[in-house]
Length: 369
Ligand code: G6P
Image (cartoon, rainbow, N blue to C red):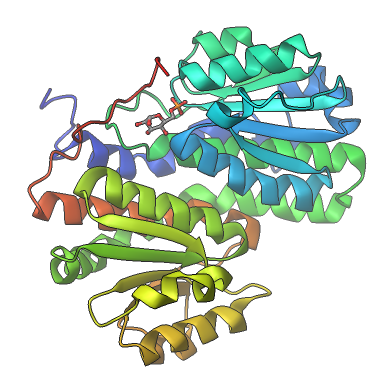
């Protein structure tokens, strides 16, 4: 086992550090920036189904559901197709309305999650086209799908998903971009500039891993708190959910993720000097509003851990801790902003003496209801 960990203390840390490679492997042979194309056999074969889809429904559980939420923003922006993101467990039991014009995309690392499998069987019966995004080759969900695309993250051993998540987001970005190009929702020049930006992501993830020391010192300060809040907007709202999930899964600290603007409808009541708030505050249309959220948190003595774009002096002046990310297109920021949140959870859990690779009560793959 020590050999399999490749010199890292835990599988989770090894898997976090594998991400430049696992994202590159997921993009390899599919993203061809020099030729200005994306080539994916499953999308080619079912291209017309996607282009004419009245809706795309994502079904998934856990971290994979968060990848679906990121994809919602991507598919709506790039492909202009209406999207719904469903917890497989809820979807399967509510007699959902599904037509033959719907494309259902199931996202699952293991390809064995019982609820996700049941959800696609149901959608298949109702005539939808099923597209599977799995990491495990030949898994049940991969086999039950009409078509699909594998994530090439390699085996993920840590129960808390890390590299599988970023690989899912990467493959979903490819599909959204390619459908957008086919539909003409993206101009050729925008498509080309987005694919060259996506091609740079593995390098930027590598750069982001250098924030580890910073996450260690933040972890030291907050490892003993009982609650954490994570806020983000737009593409980084799902990252806030995923950051909170990662922390609660492995450190057993209660954490909630929220869309930043919803803070005033509840979580703000919890903020005092004992509440660290992780705010993903990258530059986007709502940046100024997130800055106001930070001011509101500071006014209540909350502690701010901000993830920002390089050179953001405004937030540096307000925040207690700042983690800078390299610039990229807003749509791809989740692939980068997720990294320091994974590292923060990991180090907090290790400092609390938790079993990070096998947290209590959790299973890697949930094959029963
Ligand atoms: C379990 C795992 C999570 C995972 C979820 C969905 O809860 O602990 O890490 O995100 O199942 O699993 P799947 O294999 O379908 O992605």
